[in-house]
Amino acid sequence: MGVPQDVVDIPWRSPWVPVAPPQSEARVIKECGPRHVLSGRKALAIGRRLDTDDVMFYLPDGPAMLAVVHLTYSTRTPEPDPRFPYTDLYQSVPEWIEQRMIPDSNEFSPGEGPA
Image (cartoon, rainbow, N blue to C red; front, side):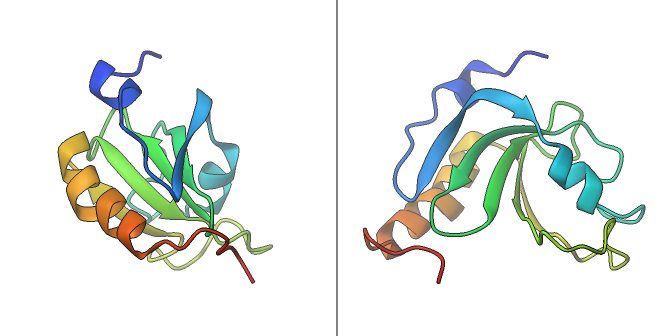
């Protein structure tokens, strides 16, 4: 499964880093219940946030181009509530950069991490 060039060429800024090579993420498949927006969808992990459990996925079959998923690591999988794992969808790389990566980078302080 190929990844579009604009996804490959994302100019990453902390706290976001690429996942190389892009990989299918079994965890998101396990966590998404049948009513979740990503249920049954192909998802390739392409990035992750260093200080949280947020993972960014390329969605080759939609419903959007990119999704940021806050993985729960719950022992109750799949999640029965379709709101979890919490997911933000982005239609394009520029939209994700503007709405997510830049604000996250501006708020990130090096040395921060999960408590």
